[in-house]
Length: 171
Image (cartoon, rainbow, N blue to C red; front, side, top):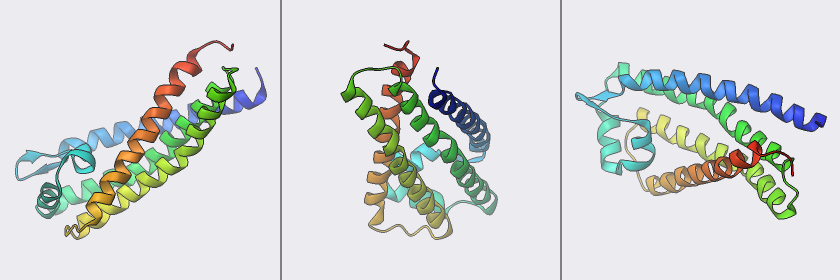
């Protein structure tokens, strides 16, 4: 196997470890996401809760839960350093497994788009950190949802394409 592929494998394994380790830490913290006796989720804050509910949750948090939520978001920055390079490396590894030039180019584009997804995730966390400090959310909530959707679409499409291709034998 070529040295470029072996280097991508090493990057993939390292990033996968960082991704899994930080994911476990963040999952462990989520059991403390309680506001007025009700559990809330990061996914809810990102995607499914309407603006009014996000404001209600963030404005009703006690200091301990705010601290844990901030820690979760800080761990998410480390998670990002694992997940997006991991997906990009997987896309690049998958390129070695195909001979079709169009598919090679699509995989390259998805690998490069992980930088955009990473930027979207950073924006998302910065918004949430700002709103934890001051839960008055204006018109930026619509932009926030578009950015979050873009992040998920880019990352999931890349992973769902690259995983089965990377698992194949070289054609």
